[in-house]
Image (cartoon, rainbow, N blue to C red; front, side):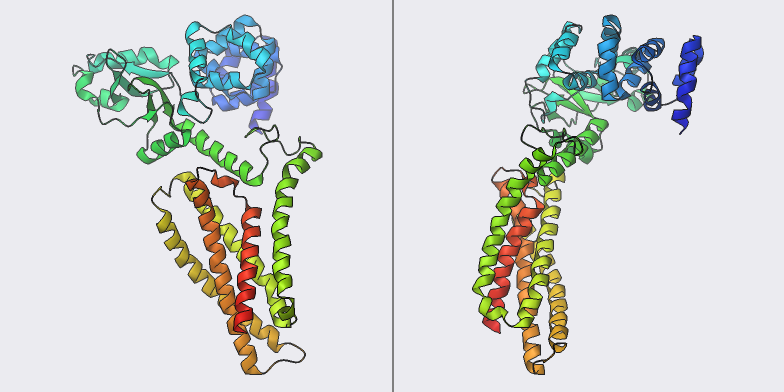
Length: 460
């Protein structure tokens, strides 16, 4: 509400030429709020406002503008303004911004960049999108190990406007190899004449440039880092991954897994580009129908299995309990699958944890199936006694016990199936997120129906 009220005021200050007041208003607020206000203005107004701001604030505000507003700005602000804004942007933000532009526009904009920025873009292009080298930041602070603490602080003050963070400064040798790091806190607390080489820490935690982005996010989380250094195969420092990058990675991976589980990627739609309302109906049908039709085959098989026990299903109690048993098993399998996929995603399950997961799921499934078996027993007993012509008490009791046992077997098998399927897919170097909820449900229904019907038929 406050931001919307300020939009007319900012536009009026621009129209009146009250530039000093406008800068004062924008400097008092967070860059996110300033960007939200400027996004409501025209491209010429945005260009005028950004030109008035200090370079570091201009960079931050531009980075928070809506992507479509950024693209409009690049298209209409003029060569010099675009060149200035891109020159002040941090390397990773600039690469991400250029990636969103149309190829024709991007080629024109890249020509405006200095050689170092173009080389940085070329280097990023050698990595996959999910590798650390594709999104790392090259705007890190470096200090010489021979500098004193006092001179190092002065050097950081000089570097600060163009660096993403100065809370960690990295120490490299003449070949560029990372040999240590020093925090701003340590520099401030140290004696001013102490060399950086004596203050720096050498117990380095780093990540390779070709490592998966999830590994970088995990290291930052586990070691509670502000920034993680990235090194090449020779140990030379090539960039950093900051904690806000780690948050973006986790969000992106969660978004990617959700889209895969929902089956919305593919057929020309990249991960992260899916728009539910904008996508045509025919394309949604094309994407979703094949999976559903394939899973329908499991129901055909399931119906065939049930038909094979048609003679026994004439007993009302067995038929009445079948929907409850099948639905419960499907839900249990889906729940177990979701939990294991999440554990795999966040790194809770390691490579050697297969047996541990099986043992844990056996215990969990055993307790849950026992509880559900008791519910099935009570339900079967009550349904049978409520019949128009109830069977003798001992017959009803026996049937309820058998159905309860069958429920235990079905639920336990469904839980193990849901938990083990993602592990097997991971072992085969597949993506567990592709094991969607309908697939686990369909398989659990098929196996569960067979287990339930066989056990009940054998024991009754």
